[in-house]
View 1 (cartoon, one colour):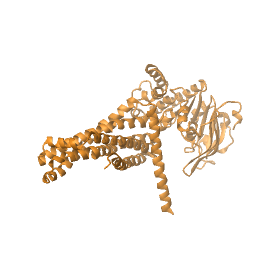
View 2 (cartoon, chains in turn green, brown; view 1 turned 120 degrees about the vertical axis):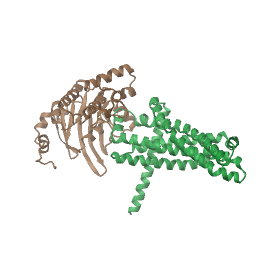
View 3 (cartoon, chains in turn brown, yellow; view 1 turned 60 degrees about the vertical axis):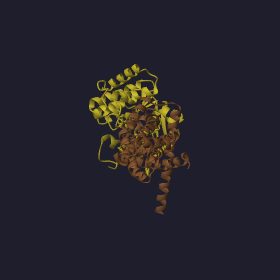
View 4 (cartoon, helix red, strand yellow; view 1 turned 90 degrees about the vertical axis):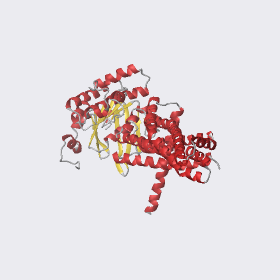
Length: 257
Length: 257
């Protein structure tokens, strides 16, 4: 019986969380639709959540591009298809790894920051204070963060795409003597611009996931500092899980075989 | 209970309200009248649910049963979007001030004016400066909440609650933890608000001295119900042993410690 009860509780909890997050997204979209946007706050969040993440995004994508090239370049040369290395790196990075890696890194950094800040505001009654002043926490806090990430995450993804391909080109040149020109030609041939744009579309969806899950987890915080810790952890974990699941679904739809 | 209020117009009324936090029953069929233009003080033991009464009055907390009437309108079932408009007319001074820690003192107090009114920047500056001066904080407007003492933070929260000239102000422990001079200043301020048109106030406090100074009506909350209601003199002369024990601060009596 207790197992069933536990299962019931978990199921109810899941649907309650999913419903709550969906309602938050719907509320946010309504404010955006009515153009009730706090521009100054949005710019400041774009800086905090987006611009300040560029270093870590650059580092992770550079290393990934390089290691991908390192693993594939020697093999390609050995099989006499060194002209395909650039294509393999560019294809994989722009369609899959660039958007995914940037999103995972930003979920860890900015998603946690959103949840922790809003969660702290809940436990110090600042959210109630906003409500009692006749101001909507969704308009004041969630919408600026949502728009900031929708603008910044695709930009970070473009940086990730470029840096990873450049890093890959450098490593292919150093370790397998694949010329830069051959690498880039191969990249250009294998990666139609529409694929690059589809990768950026993915990052827009990831941005919505990170902002909404971060905000919702923050708003659901209960019980002091420990509660903030719990909601921050769940914000990052849930966002990353959703990024992976939605990435698979989007790849399936956007890139039909 | 209604004898003293039958001739006076009510600003708000809690009608047979029940509130539960999980399995714990905080209020059971509680009724309370808030007379328009008067100061109603709520006294009671710590944790008795006094702050919950304030939250019921501006819709931050919904009752599990019963009605919350503002004028003739039942707000207990209203959606959040409609409550926001109602809260614009009701100021709320929080127990721990709940200032926005990312904003300066000036911006904290200016926020409701900036977001809700079409006031010019110069006018907002004047109104905010005047309000902060009235609580003795005119010289620290540019500081952040973390740089202020506990008493100053509390006064700032008070300024934010009254800056938009609400028709009713809810004070949650407005004088607790302040020195006797500022306690007197704030008690005076609450009294001056009554002089304004429709200057209704509900004050939750333990500070009997300032309650006796400002209250038109006093209600005592005990074990989820209002056990005494009347003018200051009526409460002082109450024959209820619980009220008498509370007023005298005695360890001996019917209140379990």
